[in-house]
Amino acid sequence: MNLSVVVPLLNEEESLHELYARINKVCQENQLSYEIWFVDDGSTDSSWQIIENLSKENHHVHGIKFSRNYGKSQALHAAFDKVQGDVVITMDADLQDFPEEIPELYNKIVVEKYDLVSGWKKKRFDNVMTKNLPSKLFNSAARNLSGVELHDFNCGLKAYRKQVVKSVDVYGDLHRWIPVLAANAGFKKITEKPVQHQARPYGTSKFGTERFIRGFLDLITLWFVSKFGGRPMHFFGAVGTLMFIFGFFSAFWLGATKLVDVYYYHVYGNLIAENPWFYIALTMMIMGTLLFVAGFLGELIIRQSRGHKNYHIEEVI
Ligand code: UDP
Ligand code: MG
Image 1: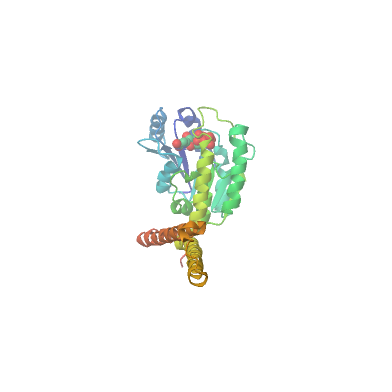
Image 2: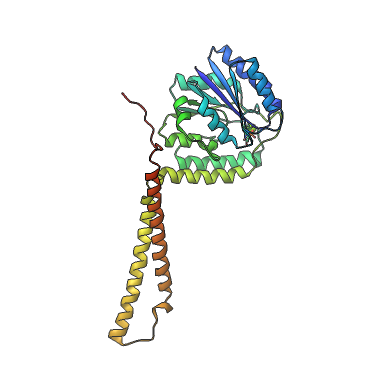
């Protein structure tokens, strides 16, 4: 099979017929063998009935129905498990993305051999203050932290080589960061393509401004995990050891000066515990030990879960 189109959706009944018709048309016109996976992420409107009817009408259409709303990441994850096409294209269900972009995205993967092509809503039709501006800041932070050079990480319209979606583990809210996950998994041929975008014709956005806070926290997690996730001791152990050494020598110095005071100058009154350094030294040693233990526990956990592969093989001959 050439192509799998994946559409996660939550309460998008008004858009589904048109979306389906346009995807269907463009795939047939380009003689692609294809399947469409609609993932109903706990809709409370008639979205699922529509998907059921479409799948009866057309054997290319498949559906997955969640028992409740789990989120876009989980919806993508469920579909990525099932897809069979050599190329996988995801798009939002709200008609903001254009199915007519499919052939060009498809060719970028098949002809130009990219692993991932992300849509770039260069001319964007969303609210300037709540979306466009924060999104600019957000994307530039993401470029700097991840090293992945994209202008629009969160665009719903993306194309992947099949191996990419089978390798990345999209959970939590990580759908925003699939290009970063892919890059961390070793898929380096990542690019973007300016795509058309339009204002939402029906319904309302399912994400509020909290998306930026969540997205940013996830980005920091990803950065940290990609750097130290496989070797926690190198971070916690190093910081912990430094803190402990600092605390230890501070305490040593306090003890030594006390001994000099007593035996050399015969001064008895100065208690070590009256010196603020005493508390700093103590805290440093305790925190240093805790960090070291955290690193050690991290290493033990990794040993336990060795079954989870954390590498991606490009080729075996
Ligand atoms: N969506 C989903 N589960 C959710 C939230 C959203 O499957 O919990 C779908 C939604 O139906 C749409 C896509 O994800 O197809 C993008 O959502 P939306 O258009 O609300 O996001 P925005 O365009 O505001 O970024
Ligand atoms: Mg949208």
